[in-house]
Length: 456
Image (cartoon, rainbow, N blue to C red; front, side, top):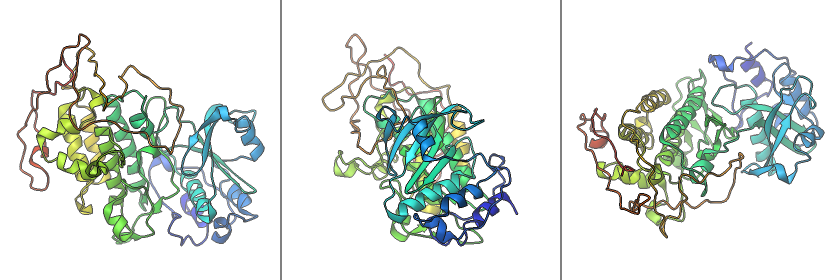
């Protein structure tokens, strides 16, 4: 019996729609050493008051690199959950920074960690905590956050992850005093996140992430993205099934419309969510922004018409990029986002096609403008800081809304002498015929022209 099958079989009849079932994935990143276990009933595992849960999990993950910490060890790791180590609070509960080494456990590698204390709101909170352990406890991939261990002691439910010093993509894009991410960094993040999603989707029995969003994409010191929070992960359809029927969970603005209406879940549901995140990366706008006019509050709905006119592409791009991006790359990325957020699930690209397209975009560096620094004059409508303002990101995850003040109309751009910069040129390219997408987005052909916004 394979390790994947054995570990999932120890959870009995996994009939609950929120807990994934066994997977058998060939990807070498996922192969882990065999384990031994005693088969507890699923009733015990799903019951937060079970007296055998901790022992069942410890036995199930014996022989793996997943540690079962006790509460005293976690107090030591976080300096008794000191407020100075507090990173933020997400949907599951507070997160503290900590440090582990061989003083905590023999042979434990010294490293910083993030300790997430789950706020157990009834059975559902416990089940999502359990699903997180079951998924990340057996999966290993460079673009999935690493689960180091857990704690199940009395009523306490805690998860210990590798520490991600750059925090979430959401913070990097929308936190008011954060520096603007450069174009190639944005593409790198989108590509890495797509690779993580591909790892889940391309399994023999695929996993549907179901909660792909900017706040669940964490960044290490090199801005390498890793997917986190697998509490809503779900088995994908197999054996000729077209979809999985389940309760509707997810986040407003990211969830696919057909899933919201029917509860029918497919890998295309994740692709829609990916498209929304890609739009956030391109535009600097949030998936849902209640501070904007009513027609602009939903990013996907607002962006579709913008993608139907070549004159509007510049308007769609994040002004904080200052025009320092590949125009051909932006065109391809816009086409990709347009396809991902299609109302027709079958029209959305597969995750492998997304990875291939983003690899091509990442190599498009020949037409990225280079020139002197251009100061963007703030206005009363757009008081965002310049690119020289850098905020220290400590992996903090916040529930509060960070107002995104990017305006639809182009900002008046001035150089340091106060002279008005020229308006960016719009290059209209010849494209091939494809009736399924807007004309200006059809297989952008090579052109010597490039975007000169930001040059003086």
